[in-house]
Amino acid sequence: MSPPAGLRLARVREPDGRVRVAIVQDGRLGLLDDADVLAVLERGDPGEPSEHLDLRDPETLDLPEPWELLAPLDPPETWAAGVTYEISLDARRHESEHKEQDFYGLVYDAERPEIFLKDAAARRTVGPRGTIAVRSDSNWTVPEPEIALVLGSAGTPVAVTIGNDVSSRDIEGANPLYLPQAKVYARACALGPAVLVPEDWDAPFTIGLRISDEAGATLFEGETSTARMKRSFAELVDWLHRDNAVPAGSVLLTGTGLVPPEEYTIAPGHTVEIAIPGIGRLVNPVGTTG
Image 1 (cartoon, rainbow, N blue to C red):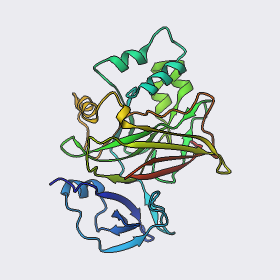
Image 2: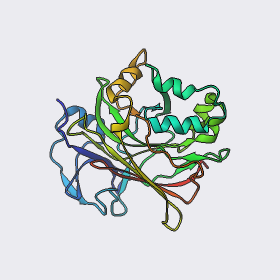
Image 3: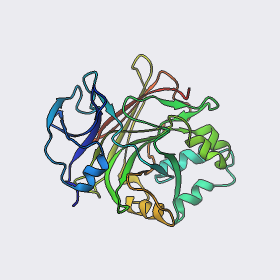
């Protein structure tokens, strides 16, 4: 059974430590007896909430203390696709020190997309309000706001969430072979605040990004749309599964079309907010890997 369109689910930890799935609706959470978001999605029928909890904010899903909002799921694997928007192609060409070798242009125009493993067992991933990090050996780190596909047991997407593929652009720009070090390190990924079953999988998503400093002043703000993607979700999922057994509950980040200017780098004390209508607003402070 397919999950109902428009279903929005979050995951919370109760004051006694119990983890529960919740339906997000009308400014409050309807608490279910399940602890596994994927199980609810695959069952199709979420069932009736046993109790309700009011939200402090219907977009960030902030909860009254001592309740805790968790990442909507802990993916066994998190994969990411790159160079799926023309703007990301331009940005990564610019950052590269080897401009005579247009690796990124070749990928953008090729049949085969760029796909890489971002995390496993959610060891490097944080949820809403969790601290994302800059590497100690990087001087240029940026957030990459993306739609993330949640993959079911059949290998097809069953929901979407917000993803932040935090990246050290100077490290990747020095040499494309350094991409794993630029992309895979402690606290280099964030997911949340909820998962959404889209009403229409073909309808574009608007993605907004705001970065603020310690005082709350805006350092960068921008917006893009998945309508600008060169590749479709189905195409990326198909390539991910080629000769590759991906476990159910894994997540695929689909690339970014929103890149802060070269002169900007996130730093400890900054805050990154990514908003996608229907899913919510993912807010993460910036810190270090320590």
